[in-house]
Length: 112
Image (cartoon, rainbow, N blue to C red; front, side, top):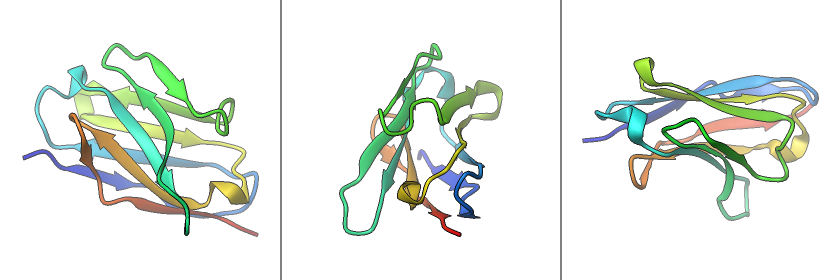
């Protein structure tokens, strides 16, 4: 049974930073494609960033240059470093991986 558990969300001022973590309980974590998605109130869930088992990354245009995804295979964890945060980054952020499993989400609120 695969479980993905996100943490690290919170309230931050515009221009601030947060680092999200997603801890996975499944085996062979290192081979799996992992991603971050987000869903703002009244909007559809959207892609934010992804990383392959080989460490190849991809980003949504809206976060390029501000967000960075990484993984620590020894800890079965994927991270999302978010810098220069904007109010429009406010959303629930979800971890996705292991061929379609989702975490429960963590709230990120960017507000002064």
